[in-house]
Length: 265
Image (cartoon, rainbow, N blue to C red; front, side, top):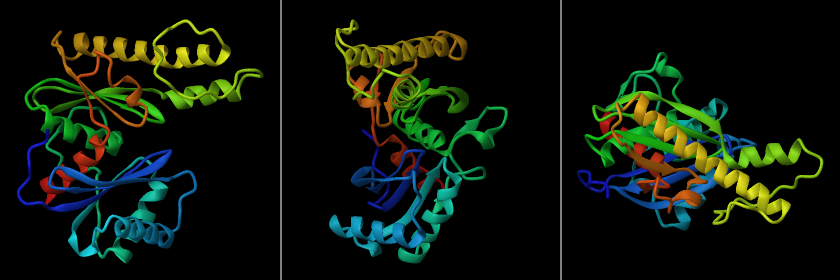
């Protein structure tokens, strides 16, 4: 459980990813509203502004109640659209999580500016949720990313791999007979049909990825200390009950953005 911030400040947050724009409103440390919109075909600023107003109205969240807006984006072309929509329709200039913004982290990579804003937001939330302990954040979306943050709040780097859905689409599009399949949590590894076999390959292949990467990070960067493993992202739900995962927090990035606003206010 996240600690409560001073007051119940309402913050609108956007995580702009390669597949969709994930948004939400935090009140204190409670997420009172969340929504998604495809980012494959970026809307105009006016279209997005009207969309946000409709979402807020449907949940009875007034514009006047919003104190801030924050954006984490890995799609530069969408940044201007979302920022312009917020300024025009909400009257708020958003905080864009980027180099120069206070995060509470010490970025120890060779080029801190190239670390994805979504990964930084996840790390900010992980540090607040699990203080003074080594952490690995696994974000399972279009890509599956691992971020290593040590007990001294140093962001050490990470690992990036193709996500489950991306891998499935690559199989279907680059073979003659393998179909698109639904992603599932598999109990049995052996598939009895082509669909089951693909699903097992995706699920247990990713399980192996999780296990090996976490084990290597434990030895390589945490001096053998066992880190907490925090899973987030759209595909993390398939692994939330696995013993390897310490905690499953689907809205981790939004909570990190809320904390970033506090740090920069």
